Image 1 (spheres, one colour):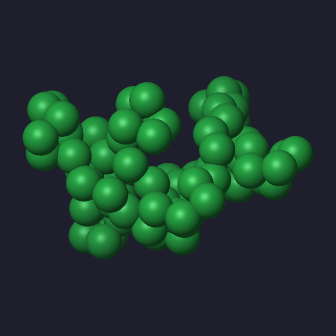
Image 2 (tube, rainbow, N blue to C red; image 1 turned 30 degrees about the vertical axis):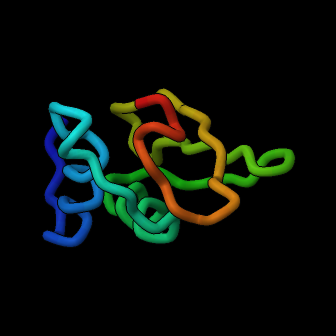
Length: 81
């Protein structure tokens, strides 16, 4: 599946999913939510800080969960990416 991303959303994903740990950067939680929305995922609040992301696409039927950081800053290390 191909996504058309705005530059800001591309930078969000690139900062998390860099090839080496030294290149990974922290991002604000709200920017991550916007980027996920841009690629077709809705965010649902579960218990506590757990958030479930569910695809709006019929092609992608998967969901995934992650925790919203207390400081609202997302890092690859915190999410074990």
